[in-house]
Each structure stands twice: as structure tokens, then as C-alpha cells.
Amino acid sequence: MQEWNHALLEHIDSLHAHEPNQDAEQLAHIDTDYSISATDHTADPAQGRADLVKLAKAHLHLHFTGSMTVERLRQMSKKHHITLDPELLNAHPLRVPADRRGWYRFQRLYDMARRCVQTEEDMRTIIDDAARIDAEEGSKILEIQVTPDSYAPIMGGLTPALEVMLDEAKKASERHHIAVGVIVAAARTSHPLKARTLARLAARYAGDTPGTVVGFGLSNDERSGNTADFLPAFQIAQRAGLPLMPHGGELLGPEHIGFIMNNAHPARMGHGVQAASDPELLAELKHNHVTLEVCPASNVGLGVFENKQNVPLRALYDSGVEVALGADDPLLFGERLEGQYEDARTIHGFTDEMLATWARCSINGSVMSDTYKKPALAAIDQWLAR
Ligand SMILES: [Zn+2]
Image (cartoon, rainbow, N blue to C red; front, side, top):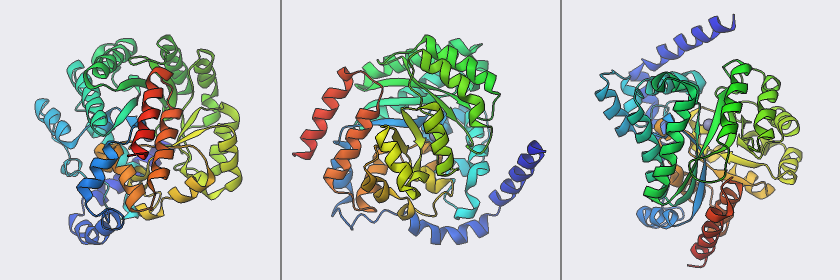
């Protein structure tokens, strides 16, 4: 029954995706919601960007396939003779009215992009690109999230798929002067026993240096599957010393955030943005030092909030909860990490002190050893004193 519903919804979604005229009409209106009003706080947008690129930060929420640039995806699709939905190549495939965004549209496009990743070289290129681009945006640490079972068929198994990613993470770290770790994430849409297999695999490579597994996550549609069924997988990871960083609190509300916090005891939570409506929960998250990986462009792209102005960044900041901004899937949501900081400044009026506070949260929320964190924290102080 559930499968039938999914199929139907996907069908409806795909029908919507092929109504170009209506989309185009509404785009004109929607575009204004997305545009960055650079004149509000920064006289010269290029200057503002250059300034934020100098702010040291850690990128803690970026998915493997979703990290690709549109240009890289275009190259891979050509190389493998795969015809992509043109929507996927227009840089803003989710820039449609809020009621048309949603998970099914996102997942359909994401799966299409994933089909273009067909060789070890492709996998290495994606990691290298992500490390390079993040380093160019001022990230000192990148913890990239992968679900190895999606790529196991390419490499002939889960273990070689993960090992290639870890090997490339280490090499890309040296090449681009950024510490790249890997978060292994199970999909909520897969069987919980598969999550246990992934947790055991992740445990074998646990560490806090570039090219190691730095955490265990749970991703995909938050409304699918039952979080309680994944607790045994979480325990396997935790027993191996791996911090947990499951997704939660984007598509579901405070109750789900509270369940994860109290039952899984995560170090971080992917999103958690819905906690903003519950001051008590925010206080508990703060008390438990749970860092929220907040990804505003993703929230808007999935229709969780109608526009960027509505993402409750100020409420989160005022609560004192630790927040690390993230890009989630720039391939689909159109913005990378620096853009999230830029929006916090230009749309939400964040001062330099506030931006530095969240940059520090991102470094402190990282699992990497102090060898990588201390210089980054010192660089943030320097940026503030500039
Ligand atoms: Zn995510």
C-alpha cells in the first residue's frame, strides 16, 4: 500500500514537472524570494563573498552525489551517454512554487544524478571536487556523507566502495589543504538490518583524521521508516566510538527531534530546524551540546519553508543552540556553503560576531582531532579582528 502511494505521488510529481508554462509563470514570482538582496548589508556583493570566503569554517552536512556541480554532472552524463531531465541541468531544479517542491521531486532528480556515477574515477572525482570547492570557500574541515550501498555495485562490494572514498578523502585533503572525513549514513528507506551492516563496516574505519570514518548517520525521507528500528545500528556505531549524526527535524517536528535526542544521544543532528518552534526543546539541545546542521537552502528547496526569510535562523541563534550551517545537496538546492553564510548576513542581518559564532560552532561540532580544529578556531578570531 505504501509502495503504491509512493508510486502514485511520484507520478503526480512527474506530471507537475512537465508543466513548463505554468512553472515559468510562477518562477518570476518565486525568483524574488530567492534573490539575495546584497544591498541590504553589503555594498558590493563580490566584496561580501570574498570576505566570507576568508572566514574559517567546517562543512558538516554535504552529501556525496548532491555535492556535484551541475557542470560535473553534465560531463558525467555525456561520458556515460545518459540523457538527463533538463531540469537537473538548469542549476535550480527546485526553484518552483513551494507546493511543488517536496521530497518526491527531490528524490527523483537525486536518483537520476546518482545513475551518472558509474566508475571508481567518477567517485574519486566527486570527492576531489567537493574538497577543492569547499577549501576555496574557506572550509578547513569537510565531513562528507555517503551511503556506500548506493555505490557498492560499481566497486563490487560495500567495503571497496567505502575504501575508495576514504582513500580519495585522504588524498584530496593533502591536495587541497582541508581535512576531509567521511560520514557513513544508512538510508531510512532500507531495512534496519542493512543499517547494522553499514554500522559494522563504518566501525572498522573509525577515526578523527582525514580519510577515516568520523561518524554514523541516517538519511533519506525522514517520514519513511521507524527511527526506533535503527537504534541497534546506532548502538553498534557508538560502541565503536563513532558519534551519531542522523537526519531529523526537517520534515518532522519537535517530537521526532526529542525522540532522537533522548534515545540515540547524537553528537549532531542533520537539520533539526523544526526545534525553533519549541523553546524547551532548544534548551535541551543546548544543554546536551547537540549541534544542529542547519541547511537553509535545502529547507526552502524541499518546501519546508516558503522562502529564505522564513527559515528561523534568528530564533535558533537567539536560543544559543549550537548551529553549523550546511549546503546539503548544492547540486539540487543551488547554493554551496559560503552562500548559506552570505544569506545569514544579507537576509537575516547576522553581524560578523554572529557569523563567527556559528563558524566556531561548526568547527567545535566537527569530529576531527584538535590538530585540525585549533588552527581553524584561531583563524576565526583573526577574521573577526580584521
Ligand atoms: Zn542531508
